[in-house]
View 1 (cartoon, rainbow, N blue to C red):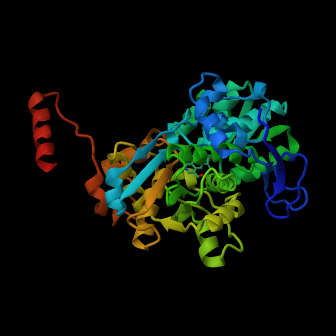
View 2 (view 1 turned 90 degrees about the vertical axis):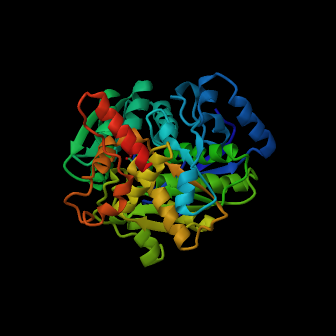
View 3 (view 1 turned 45 degrees about the vertical axis):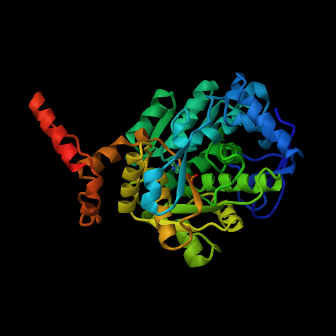
Length: 443
Ligand code: F0G
């Protein structure tokens, strides 16, 4: 489907196997594999033109905001491509959030506007297509909910069977309901995300199932396109900063890889700083960088209400470290209260996102306070999931009981001004008018 030449390469020992094993790990040293491109299309202006031309066409692959950029993806035979017309996500201005954070120009690329409402679709379309091209019947993933929702949808579209391993009781109902409706065999395991990954890694050694977690390098390649599309939307003038949430660290790795490749191809002339934000209760990467200088990562038992990033042993930390260093970005951690506050602030800008995405705004505020992001610099937040992915969190926040019985309960009143609890009234006009008048007086 593309003329670009690429090969698999190990991130640690540099081995270049001709194909990957079931676990997508290097047979020589056990570390992760990635695609390296040995030859890029030469003419960057011509490439930009081809990409914008494809946007005007109605072939499924050209309508996809991922496959439109297939010249920067590993080849997959076109007849096996599974697409839900992913990508093509909006870049929004966030004027109120900009004022709150103390920067002049703040934008959000909303990856929650993908077909299954998270950024996972951009990688899944490529990796699920590779599974189909490889002749697999079953695909599988361990997930905090979004990967599984996405995988189940693409598997269903591609006539594949899907197996989902999720931590019991620790993912949102919205995400669980997606994988059920898309027909996955859904197993809620009595463990956390990291426990699900362990089981899955054992399973793929025993059964011919195709692994669709982000250790699969096709996922990373597809997820690169969010950054390519972002640069196109910014007319190839990069922002000063891009800020992403960090969980398993596939997304940060993918966006960083795209930035480095675009620089190499002269599609852009400078690199934005890519910063990665983690929740305090799920901060193994933050600790790796701050405490161990990135020399090692100590797995931890993770805990945060932002369940999408409740991950204690991130698979792609070495890839993420490399792009953090190469772009000069920062790593930050933020509290549960800061996540809830930032989520409500993004909502109040009319955009909305799930808790894990809101860590980006909370992190930005911290980076501004520390002077790492300056007022006049341009910033793009990557919002990874849609508001409706986790309505429970939002409802509990607005009703005021999100932090009940948690260590943050005493500080929760600090952000109560953002709460908009629903009013329960008699079916009576005067009651509604009184509510309206009161809201007007307080606005
Ligand atoms: N934001 C959302 C909404 C997510 O679902 C995830 C990861 C992340 C951020 C972090 O991205 O792992 O690439 O660093 N969700 C995975 C899942 C792990 O299973 O859905 P990452």
